[in-house]
Every structure is written in structure tokens, then in C-alpha cells.
Figure 1: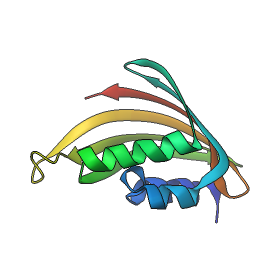
Figure 2: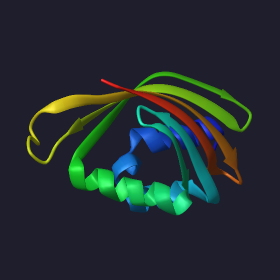
Figure 3: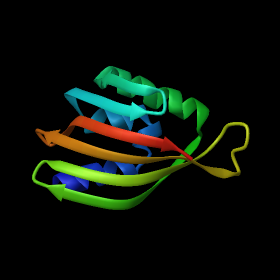
Length: 120
């Protein structure tokens, strides 16, 4: 499967809020460098999976709307918006944030992620 297809499968599935699905996509040495509204956040693979678990508790559903996706060899850049519904209001979808991400793949798995986000 191409690097682009692997990254698309991350965002088109529920892997963001499904730690078991995320686990299958991540490389054993995966890492995340995230410039967030709270500053720089660094995560290893296990922390990324734990974040997915936490997100699934707060948001029973998540939908990703990809604006742009560009792939070159084993690097894929994605601009997307994430929409969620909350446990308190599961019937109403809201915009959570906008993201710009660059993924590096290794051995057919998501290896390094460089991400910036802006809250809605």
C-alpha cells in the first residue's frame, strides 16, 4: 500500500478515536511532535495510543474532512479539519480544530508525525 493510502486510512477510519485501529497503523518507534495551542507536545507511540483512548471517552464520534493531501515518496502532508460529537451532546457535530500534518512512513507504518493545530 502506498504512503498516501496508509495516511488516508488513518484519517478516513476511526483510528483517531480507536486505539486498536491506531495501534495497527503505527510503527513500533512512532513519535509525534505537535505544536498545539498549549505549546509543544512530544509523544511516543504508547502516549499516542493513550491519547486515542482519551479522545474516544470524550468524543463518541469523529469525522475528518481532508482539504489537501500531498505525497512524495515516504512523506505525506495533510491539511484537515476534525469534527466531533461530545458525550454530552452526541447528536450535534462540532468543529474541534484545524490541523496541518506531515507524516514520515517507515516499513509501511506511520513513523514520525509533525503536526500543528488551531482550535475552532
